[in-house]
Image (cartoon, rainbow, N blue to C red; front, side, top):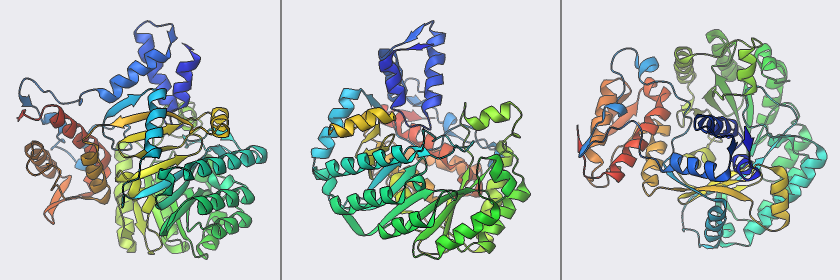
Length: 510
């Protein structure tokens, strides 16, 4: 299907992980409507419909709100049958999509405004390069080269310097996160230059967490030294699995032996070292998963781990390889649920401390501050091509096109391509998401001193307790293992419920 250049630029402005899904959805709707070409006006209208729509699933008629669509199934095993499977990976409030011009104006107003004193704040720096592509990863954007990396690092320095000239750039930062892509593919001298720009131009809190994401292959000692000398105090390493055969099938080059040697060397530094392990991978058995967890506990000296479920990304390399028979199928819902429960049981038996549903530690150096901040709605300033962030009630997305990004920074323009103005109730949704992430729903204060949300909220939480997703504790509810597995779907339902009650505050509950 034909796309206008303006429409395609809007898709390119979206984060790399969701770009293919958005494009396929837009083309599908256009085909249903008999369109031969896709214009920017058409894309804008679809985005407005998506972010401004009423809560789906509720059946408000007259003055009644039907809560049944928010309830979980009460028959069967709650771990595997509480809800229908979805592709939701985060809990978000609804909002209104802004045009590119509106997004630019919103950013200009944001960076001129005096930041709220005491409000937590982080900086996200996106590195949109990888030396090689892993089949499971949706974030690959550009092939790495030393020349491209050097030019990009210089642009990051300029963007940081431009931020420092604004009031927004003079507020203290509690966390800095280098994500990607593969930030550890940066040349040591380029990483040093960007870190120096941060320290020379911005203000870091005394206990700020500074994280460098990366992988084992290509992470040389010179890069580690540059990172540590520049103030990095946390390394996040994508391991996914210690099993050599499974790693190679995913495009990972380092063997189990190499991975363990690298991680233990890195853990000998003063920085925190955390890794990602993924469950639900193609070809991964329960035995393979449990061996990965034992290996983590017994053969590494790292400080923390994040246990994540494999995210299904339609059109990804992995999905194409599975469809063509070049990879076995990934775990289905029931298998993923069993792997999740086994992970929780193993980590508890090892004596690791749980910080949130996916995050575990055995050393206080693992704080997970950046993750906690962004999950609770704190300000996050975006830097780099394809970076996303949020200030107050506005989510900003910077252009994902490298050439457009470099040109904008060179001209002294913030490369914001799009934005979403979140609804007024977004702070309630932030609190819900943060409490779910920690595995305990206080459930007090959401209803705003006995406001209209109180009755439906109580009804939904009580039903979830009957369904086996919650248990009463400490004046609220703890998530059971089943509730932890379904926490994102539960959060999405609560977000829709909050939206419904905001739109129709006087409806009765049935």
